[in-house]
Length: 95
Image (cartoon, rainbow, N blue to C red; front, side, top):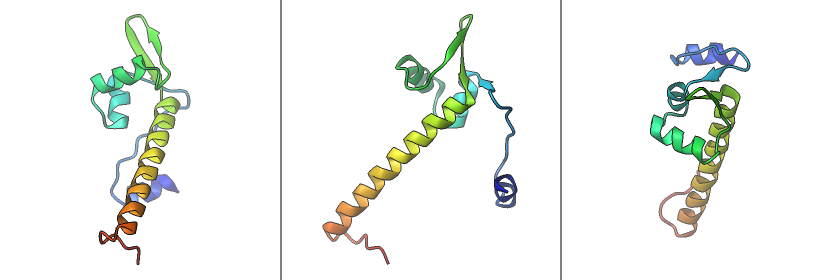
């Protein structure tokens, strides 16, 4: 259903096999960040990865888990900012 909904809304759909490993370029694309920023995240162990020779590989599941965590944190910060703006009567009233 989600695939059909996405397609109906004009969004692209990509099918990736379970356990798929991504290159750093692919993982950066999924997160919509630069490759150097992704490398920094990997070096900080924010996202698990493994090395194949000199190349890093990242599991799709780990990329999506990181994205979900960041999205949740972002949502909490935005909710807090909205509450503070409402408390200070800055014009952000919920109808």
